[in-house]
Length: 80
Image (cartoon, rainbow, N blue to C red; front, side):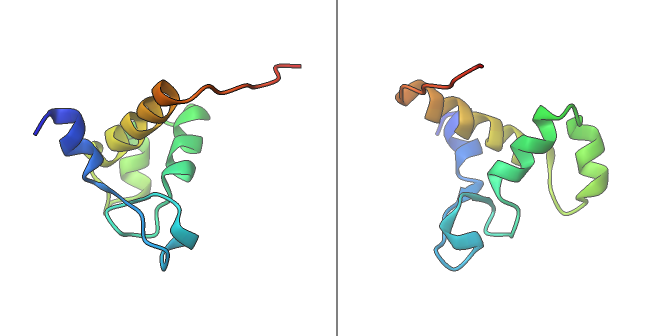
């Protein structure tokens, strides 16, 4: 298993958790929210302090999922 696939194994989708949105390891931490924190400028180290039950690899898994999703679809965003 490649490192990227190993990271993605940390992301789970369960219709009973967060309405089926991708989450970290079956916990109620949606990938979307973690990416929002990262996009706002929070560092992984700061987030690890805020969320002590998460690991650095969980945040890397969120980034890898976003990368894979963007590489497989066309995304049209209005920048105006």
